[in-house]
Length: 169
Image (cartoon, rainbow, N blue to C red):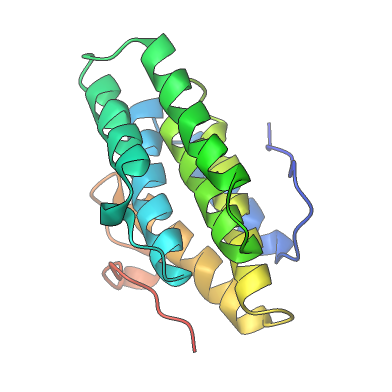
């Protein structure tokens, strides 16, 4: 069953549907790994230094511990809440959306659907950073699809290797 968009975004529905189909084929651990890549990618796209923020570093670490069975669900949820508090305090809308993507990514250990919510927040960050830029939206969704497809270790759609970073304009 397809996931629903929970936030208002300007998107490309066919690409989101492709991502959603791929998402349904992944394990929760694969989604958690991908969501953390997505969070770092999205924060970099808005110019946010993840290494400079201890709350993010700690949240990402808790998610990675959960992936190994070394963190409780309570710890994952609390780490996600701390990242969301960081987002709430942010004045820049694009950075706030990117931090929300990171909060959802951290929480993917709690609920797998948070990976898709993180992907949608990444689109919202792009919408805010590059208003009306459909090419930027397309590039972001294609990055998401390519990197999630690579989580299984197979070739990327179209046979090309995934790009580790996507740059806009």
